[in-house]
Image (tube, rainbow, N blue to C red; front, side, top):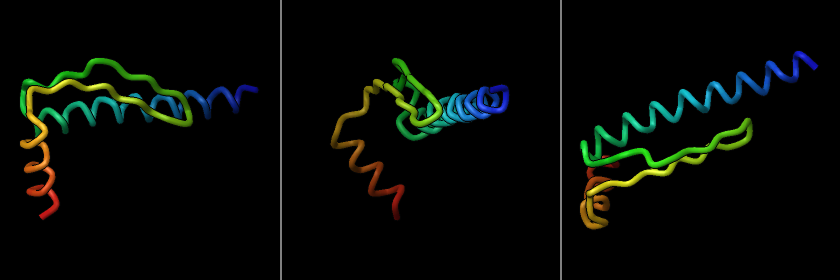
Length: 68
């Protein structure tokens, strides 16, 4: 039981760290008007809710530039 709990906890900790990294990266790309509005994580998945002042056209442009 302890090993299962530790594996579950480690998986959640990894996803929690990923939330912080994702938040930082989005703010770097989309600017300071980008805010985390919520998140949910469990060992199998991670959900990240975000709001930004960047328009859809600007997001598309950023995506194209980043892939080049």
